[in-house]
Amino acid sequence: MKFSFDELILELQKGPQVPPYSGPYTIPILVDDVKQLQGFNMTRGTFFTIDASGMGDDWVAILRGRGVPFLLLGETSSLHRPDLVREKFDSVTSIDRLFERIEEVEGLVVESEHIWLPNFLFDPHIGMYSTKEKPIPLERGAAWRVGFGLFQMSLTFRQEVIEADTYMERCRQLIKAGQIEIGYSQEETEAFRAWSAEQIEAARKNFLQQREDPSRGVLAYVDRTGRVVSQTQGRNEGDE
Image (cartoon, rainbow, N blue to C red):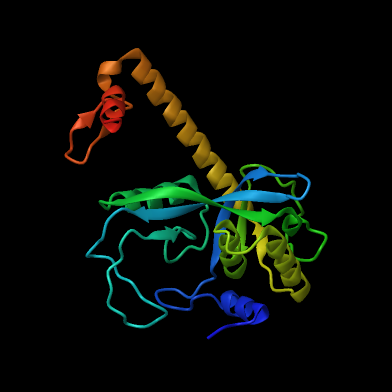
């Protein structure tokens, strides 16, 4: 069954109303770069995903609310809330706890992906600014919540299913129709900035420890057999 553009957007805006929670379905993105070039005025936003390299026999999947038995293989999932109760990442602990729980499972790892959003979507003066707080500068590290339909469409642009001109025009159509959802998230901006600062500081300390005493293997990694591999050894084996 084919949908017109308007029908498709209305369908996407509904969100997948399935157990164990009913939404809202907004995805947090972190502003990474703002481009202001001739013919390309877009903001790159980063979001977090779960990447699986193998197939898990203990994963539960629900397909549009239907009991369809299948096993997931090499899937990628977008993270949008810390747990089934809270809707937003309101602290460093809420971020760390979720990431740790995911990476405790063999074969799962937290990665980052990106989308592109037209700069005009962040303009508070054209009617779609969905926060009650005062407008803020569009700056790196700020967290914004993107609605389900807009997020889906941004992925089709990143995957080169639609061209930039078409993508921009469709975003303008959504604004006129009052169907777009995007808003600044102050508490998540603070939480993710604090979390990023801790990650940078931890990496710096590990680097200094490795430089002072390479035998400690602070920056070494563990291979699939559980053997500790040094940086140099890992690079040499990877080149074979």
